[in-house]
Image 1 (cartoon, rainbow, N blue to C red):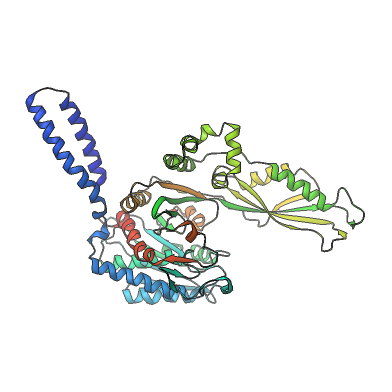
Image 2 (cartoon, rainbow, N blue to C red; image 1 turned 180 degrees about the vertical axis):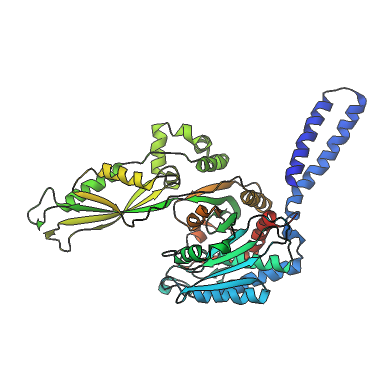
Length: 503
């Protein structure tokens, strides 16, 4: 509706301008009346956006019930210890299944290994000409936690000063919970769907990804040739009580972990050997650290910079507005290299993370090694990058090998899709004129595994979080505000109904 109104307003403005240029009394009168009419309509349209969302048709009492469920279910979910290892996701899957069974939503649990399980559920479409499905993807496992460093027990779901504490409150039991509540809302509100909504909760994302790998290998038919997938990722940064931007992850860099081994003659530490293994390794790593992979601008990264440019300080805004041109300046190139927040967006990156040599101080070892964390942008060729690293190292007595034989090529999804547009429209309705920016993340998510199946996969969260709250992910005192638990399902419901509800 807003798109049609926007078009009509522009047409009205053109006609008014044409009428104003003419002097006939009748047309002047028409122009005056039209100005009054437009003045009355435009403010009303600005207020209509929120009211036209699907959630506006749900009564306040019923919305209160859904919000209460979200808080109650989140506490229950956080109290299930799915620390990986060992995972114990079967208990999380059973939690989901009990609710889905009570709501009459079709579901299945797949225990693919003892205590490890995936859960699949579906709300079927009701259309004669259905579109391809939308998948809610979430993982049930969480990373380890040390209760001694937490203010409140990590599996308590305790509410203190308006926040609920628990491992998984940010990554990503909060999103799985919002997805569950939306599934229930769609069922209870009897929303007529023109595409299936699939709920998929998987195991082992925080370690090997065996839950997703097993499901794709053994139950791919249950994905039903889906068109869209919403997974963890994204960021709605809250600063001074206002959302600064809505970030949607459209791609992720892929890891290429390298093991570098230097070889040399061993000996006693009291008699230095110039070409020892540790010395060779240090020289090789120095060459590697001095090397800067070439800068390149992916279309989605260019879109990110242009989207954020109006919200940056003047000098940075000019750089963001045309990043390709700015990068031709060597001073800008150095600024990019020194800026951790944008350097990873514009090049493949290299980080030395581990070392080992002798077990004794007075022994020069025959081998010394280091591990290097390489992250490749979508489109990069892992084999070609590996060869370029070997050339940089340039030492026949230093080997560079990938830690695993499998090369995974990074991928991304476009921004000109119905789901991305729905996220943009709903974000504006809730948060006003804030940038909705596509992002390439430095980390890895399981979206990488689903895109090769022909699915447009996005990292998107309906939650807002301050920088401090976001930093608790994988950290101590992980928490989520209760007001966000109450609001997030409503936001996600509005996104989903815009892309999946029958008109």
